[in-house]
Length: 156
Image (spheres, rainbow, N blue to C red):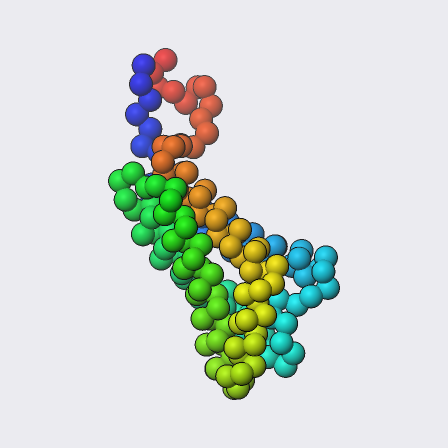
């Protein structure tokens, strides 16, 4: 008897991965900030705009890179490296763009990007992208389906 479940489609895996990425990122940044007493954007006087832009850019990059990986017929786990690198670089770019729109000078914006890139928050960002990207690929590769009760099987 073979099970003909189609599994999780790439768009559904992308949606689950993106929601998981965003939730883990916010929770990870919050917990690390609470435990260490440090701010995610360590340069004073930048305001909330650079951080919001950075997260938005990171989520967009995560979506685009993950979609490039999971839409293939047999997505590979090695493609998750692309997801992590794209998400990390997009976060830094978003920080710079957000600082620019906030009227911050280039030196302070670069200091904020450099401070983030060398902080534990960067590890949280990369780990979150790795976990969520790997999960999206795993959902497509394993041909997982929704949970089913025994009486839902029509074969009996």
